[in-house]
Amino acid sequence: MAYWLFKTEPDCYSYGDLERDKKTAWDGVGNNLALKYLRQIEKGDLAIIYHTGDERSAIGVAEVVSKPYVDPKLNDPKLVVVDVKPKRRLSKPVTLAQVKANTKMADFLLVTNSRLSVMPVTDSQWSFLTD
Image (cartoon, rainbow, N blue to C red; front, side):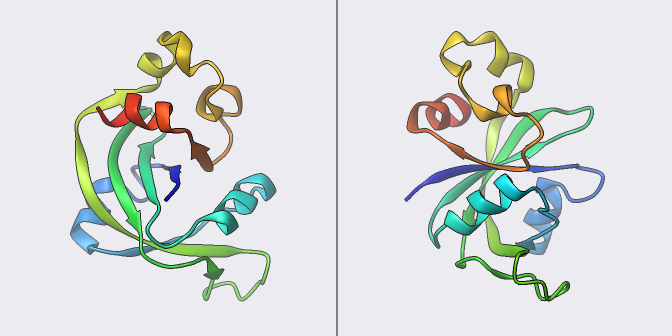
């Protein structure tokens, strides 16, 4: 099992929307590096759902329930999606400021390449975000 971080604009699709919907296709990823990461995701992997915009916080954990597949809305083999379902809301959101304040998180892609909407998360980064 691997860990990931998925970014979303909460006005567009929030963790609360995922809880309501029970499952969704994680789509809208267009960046080549983010797509590369999305193609590496396996069924059973876990993802932090991170709200961008004014919130800038990790909000909850989702479980990936499918392998990557071509986005059926776009029918472009380069653009893939995965299906996710909510697992649990974090007891307290973890803000970007908290992440940046921790020197052990300095190499986290959320800090070093903040434009990515999908990124891998190490075990230690996962522990920081979910404990």
